[in-house]
Length: 174
Image 1 (cartoon, rainbow, N blue to C red):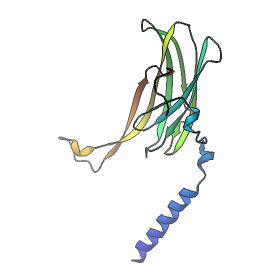
Image 2 (cartoon, rainbow, N blue to C red):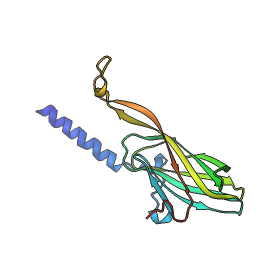
Image 3 (cartoon, rainbow, N blue to C red):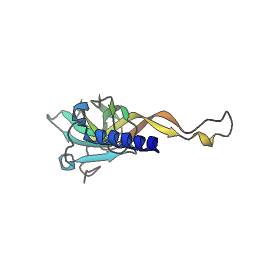
Image 4 (cartoon, helix red, strand yellow):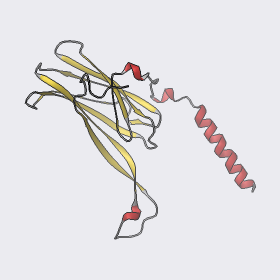
């Protein structure tokens, strides 16, 4: 009985200590209001918010933030590629970048920036992004082989495409 009480007290103390921690020093940037970003997409694990800027007539810059609002496992090695596509579906320009943080923990965010020099013939810009995520792998579905206890974590690289990422009517953050 005393052992359970001490276990409960230590659990509550640990949770209270975690709630009081300041996570801003671990690489997380302050949450910007959604109104500051014009575009948004989300997968099962990550939310991307960004703006497309044109500092000069032959350049495009995509600035944004990646958030892990609900996934218990960290988002790792988040990388981006911005591709300019012309009317014949040919690639005319390409730019790459990565999130500033190597891993984005739950309720944290990381900024990213991509730039590319445009050819002037682009009709749209497609954004590709991929990241590594450890998801549960259900071992009970195995039909043959040795028995395994409980679910295992399986590292997967998830790849996504955002078609017309800078379009005036596409992927708007509301």
